[in-house]
Image (tube, rainbow, N blue to C red; front, top):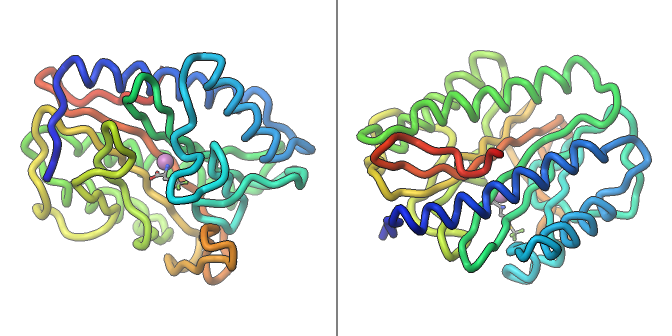
Length: 248
Ligand code: MF3
Ligand code: CO
């Protein structure tokens, strides 16, 4: 069942989303070779707490950290680590902010120092895939229209779209209906209508879309070791149009 949100509830999620966006901006400012994802995680937890919010991912199904930090061939759900990021790495930082009981979810991929053309093209394409998907996320379209747009754009440039992890509805809990895949035929799935709030979070790989999970039970990687990137926003469908909740 899709839980529709009131204007007031969307306003609360917007506040959580603004804080999340500001936190991402701070991460971007700090990121450099030598920094560790463990330090980023510490920063995020301190930042959110100082602003009256909490990191919803910490403790979620036993997940131990405030953020997911996914480096290079890691697709998502990577653990923050005390290992220095190196020039040329790409890293996705994903977090869910809880502000007064209402949530927002956004992931961003960053290049560390100077990165390869392959990596920078992947980042650009993945971000563009997200925004093309968002452009299709309008009332009366269906989830499948968003999914199809993302898949056709990504594949037209030679990238694969991860199938094992998808977007989701969100509200007072992290994962609600509907499911939001980033691939598949248009015209399918739930019809978008005012009050729906959900994430779009495409993960694009340079090689195959196939995934494997490390022995830690969380870290998901590309099977072929190719680079993977992700950009994610939380969106609300409203009477006045679609609002990106996780922008400043
Ligand atoms: N933020 C993730 C998402 O985009 C979920 C993270 S899984 C967790 O859906 F366990 F780390 F919380
Ligand atoms: Co997320």
